[in-house]
Length: 163
Image 1 (cartoon, one colour):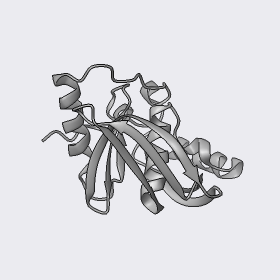
Image 2 (tube, one colour):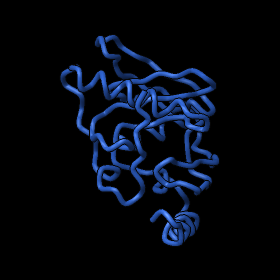
Image 3 (tube, helix red, strand yellow):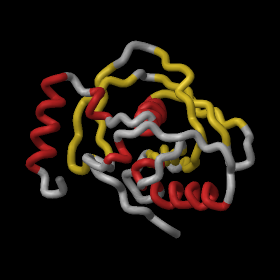
């Protein structure tokens, strides 16, 4: 079991778009094991590969005890009007802000065997799908905050003991 350390705000890997996974080899299998191990601790809804220092399009999720992963995920559909929902991020520890998210989302990707994976739903699952695909596009949830909340979040980051 390898719970990998989480990369924090300011790390360049979190700002760069992730490359697609073209070949599934032992390295990708190990990445998936590490993503699963890293998302298992309580309080974690998802971990994207860049959060553990790997610039590839993959993430794991842990929603209500349902743990899984998806390779090369694409956010293909959202529904409803964006609404403010409480959100945090392992890469920005200790902060919790209201971020704009759609109430329903759908992601399509593949598993290690090349089979199609479809994840869709509302609530925390919808939020996690959007949050993790944002990570793969080099975005943090802070970019989804209203301007005043983003300024406050940046102040909190500057004053944090981890930054």
